[in-house]
Image 1 (cartoon, rainbow, N blue to C red):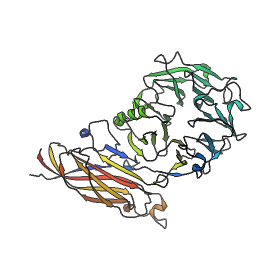
Image 2: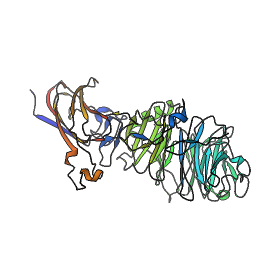
Image 3: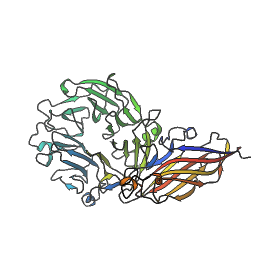
Image 4: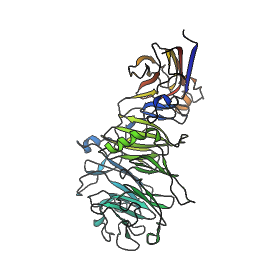
Length: 509
């Protein structure tokens, strides 16, 4: 005989992000089995990611049949002038609204450039290519060798870094063990002054490695290899800099898989997404796996990827993105606060298909896409809508041996004007979800601080109209229940505030 009605209330469903690592029945309801095209918003709710709007208008004309903009960076000149450089179709462009081809007679056969700014000049490095420089004084893009101030031979490296007042470069074809550095404040001089090179053959902790990427953090020059990491202190004076620490059996997957958050370094190793913790006093470098909850998924993606993996840290949106282009999947790590196990909340994005990222001096996230430069700022992918979905792990109501009769689910959402929301539920791991759709009321969403607090006359109107509570009747029975919410994002954001699941608990089965 059926017992009294029992409830499971999931406040902010999925706020702990996706967890595909632990056994499904042992999951806390705050974890999600799936959170696609979602972020964790500042209130801790699963919410729709933004999409992008096109910044450039002539991308199709200049990019032809190429895959789009594959590298992007911003150059802030001494006089405050800002230039966005982007690369695609074996060309280099400057500008945003209009992409202006400045390639000239240069021979370019790929678009995976590493970029850096030093001394009112902007530098481009890519393996197998002569390094390039754009000089603000002449507004000209040339090879470094052709620059009037060039001295020595700049290495044809795959990675460059502007730090400690000089250009550092490495990963040269046939020589992946040597680090090169320019003269002080002169990135085109590789023979005079304090320029030089450093052979790392004898310092790799495992005996041998290859330089893959470079980054500066907290007065350390950090050299990331495939299987190990070196930290040098005192890099302001390369002749006396000291190897302060080494890390073995941890490295980086590819060049653009590392970002500084200001307080930490996040990077992608074949063992997962890692944090290089900031520990100045101890002069040591403990490591944290921030992708624990999706670790197997990340490792599989990293090993299967054949394209150029790109990452970005966006302080304005407080997330760290990893793009796996071949899979068409972006992993979004919320960096506001770690979970109890030290991992970050993670969701995934699909259908956006970005190729590269940069955060501009104005804190705008620019994205390289098929048709040019786009900006992360709207709830559409260009002109297209996209699907959002959240699914819980199986819920047992505390006893997986008893039959459950799901009676109703109260769904509380925030925003989502005129959106059609679909409640999904299924029993006993079947994957055969029953569905019930409902449509939210139409309103103009002010989102607290937009459009004069949701009023036409500038007064502070109540935001209660943004909250929708819907009771959805359900049916069927089984020992385990999974629920999900899906909707289409088409110009309006939405967040899932609460799920209140009502079930009758029946006999032991």
